[in-house]
Length: 267
Image 1 (tube, one colour):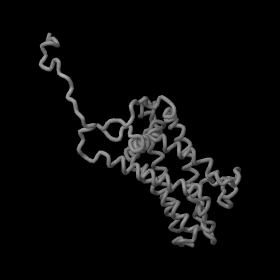
Image 2 (cartoon, rainbow, N blue to C red; image 1 turned 30 degrees about the horizontal axis):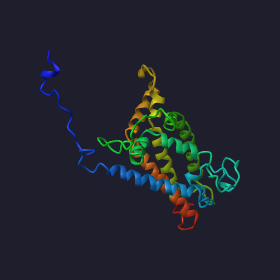
Image 3 (spheres, helix red, strand yellow; image 1 turned 30 degrees about the vertical axis):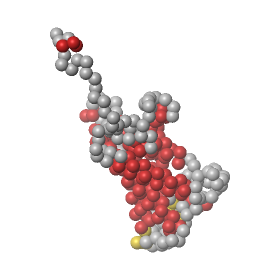
Image 4 (cartoon, rainbow, N blue to C red; image 1 turned 90 degrees about the vertical axis):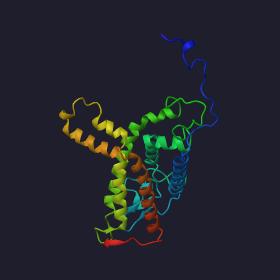
């Protein structure tokens, strides 16, 4: 048996490397883009949520998803589910759903990676040192709340149903049934929201987890296959839905503010 004293590398220490990382590529670029993109979207969304105007097109029943469901006394005819909250400036018009949507996105597995790297530098990239002295994982406050992602998924599914209802109701015109560019945008946004919600890792586990024999559950197996295919595009869908949400909101705002006219195809 070879002893420590006779080994060729005995007594040697690890090479002292002054550089924090030996990566020579632009490893900082992806987290920078993520930081800029998420900051821009959160800024836009925050301004719109507290703007309290230009969220509803009465003529065509267009309601921006940022205000759905509208539940304050400011909502007027946009309130499909009543107005239990007062018209307080500090209360968002979609006060009942916004916290759950925020929670679903914040606890999403992809978004955790995105903002851990871009905002907390934990770590900013592979083979790059963490920006913090110690790491305790998601076992302590506040990150322990990441574990409620499963329950946030259920809330997000309910909200997606409400958004689907909004898109259906929007097929309205003064003459009855109507169809315009706004409908295309609202429906497209709903389709993307469902794709992102169903591609969630929690959804994949819910439909296919704890099954010992897929052959005995053909319906759940088929659904699991569909969700698995969507799951491979979860990151892309996360960004696409941020784009469709902003586009839908901006279009409804532009029509409601009379900046543009809705392009009508039928009525």
